[in-house]
Image (cartoon, rainbow, N blue to C red):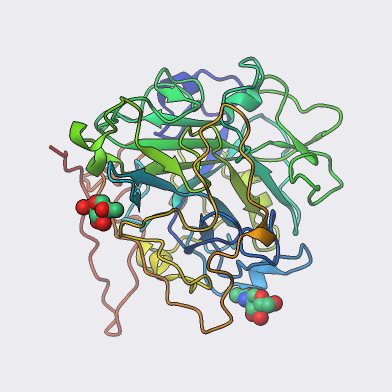
Length: 427
Ligand SMILES: *[C@@H]1O[C@H](CO)[C@@H](O)[C@H](O)[C@H]1NC(C)=O
Ligand SMILES: *[C@@H]1O[C@H](CO)[C@@H](O)[C@H](O)[C@H]1NC(C)=O
C-alpha cells in the first residue's frame, strides 16, 4: 500500500487509512447539448449537459448496447474507456440579465497537452482488497438537480459527495474533496482567483443485481461513514471502484467587482436554473472495453494517478482526445456568446424549496431536430494558471512528464514536439 496520492488531493488524504491507489485521467468535451439518456431517454432534456467519453453517447442508451464496439473514439485519455460521464454546465449571469457559459480548463497535472472543456475522472481504490468493476450496462446518478438548500445531515457523507471548491491562485487546496475549508455545498460566496472546482463522488457500493434503478440511485449506496477506508452496507455489499470527478470552471474572466450583482449575491447559475449550486449532479454510463477497468483496478495501485504508470491501459495524446467530437442534434447556442435565456425550460429557482422541473412534454423549446446534426463547436482551449505536466529535467512525483505521451506521428514518421505547458500566472 502506497501512501502517495494524486497531486490533487494533497496532504489531508495522505493520512486516510486504506487508500491504496487511484486511476486518474482527463476527458475533454464530446458534446454539450440537452441530452440525458438516463433521466429523459428518447426526449430532449429540459436542461443542458456537458458530456465526455465515448462517441456512442445517444438520446437513448439501452443497457444492452455494446458501447465499446459502437464507439469509434473517446475524449478520455485511456482509449479503453468508452463510458460516458455528464454534468450540468455553469453560466455567468451578466448584470443586464444575459447569460454566458463559464469556460472550463485543464485541472492540475492532467497533461501533456490541454483538453478542451471536459473534466478529470478518477477511479479510486478506496479500500485494500478486492474491488469489483462495474458490469456492462451499468449506470448511476449522484446529486439532486432540484435541491436548492443544504437539507442533508452534515454527518451523512451523501451531503459531502457533491461540493464546490474555491481555488485561490495556483493552489489546489489542502483537504480531501468535501472536507477542505474552501469547499462549499453552494456556489462560493465571493470571487475565486483560480476558478471553481466541482468535486463529485459517486456511490461506491452496489446491490450486485441491478444495472440501474428507477431513480438511478437506489441500486447503489455510499460506503458507511466515509469515502475512503469504509465498508459497504449489507444492502449494497459489492464494493466497486470509487468513481469521482472534478470540473474546473474558469471563473477568472468574471471576477471584477463591477461584474458582480450589486446586492452582494454571487453571479453563477447551473444550467437547470440553479443559482444556489446545491443542485449539482452527475451521471455515469459504464462503457469500458472488456475487463480493462477490472485489470487496471487490480494492477494499477501505485497511487500517483499518472496515466502512463498504468501499463494495463492504453493512453492517447491530447489532440486525439480533443478530436473526438459528436455533432449536436438540438439546434441552439451552447458556447461562447451571451444568450437571453438558459437553453431549454429552466426558470431560475433559488429555493429554499425544491425546484420544480418543467415536464419534458411541456418544454417545446428547440426540440430534437430531425435535420442534419450541427457540427459541434469545440470549446476554446483555456490555458490554466498552473502546470499540467513536468517539462524536465528528471521527473517530479505525482506530475506527468510532458514527453510521457508522444503526439501522433506525422506522415514522414516524425513526432511533432509537444510544447511544454508551464504555469503562467494570471494577473
Ligand atoms: C443514436 O440513435 C439513433 C436512433 O436509434 C441511431 O440511428 C444512431 O445511429 C445512434 N447514434 C449513435 C452515435 O450511436
Ligand atoms: C448584456 O451584455 C453583454 C456583454 O456586453 C451583451 O453581449 C448582451 O447582449 C447584453 N444583453 C442585453 C440584454 O443587453
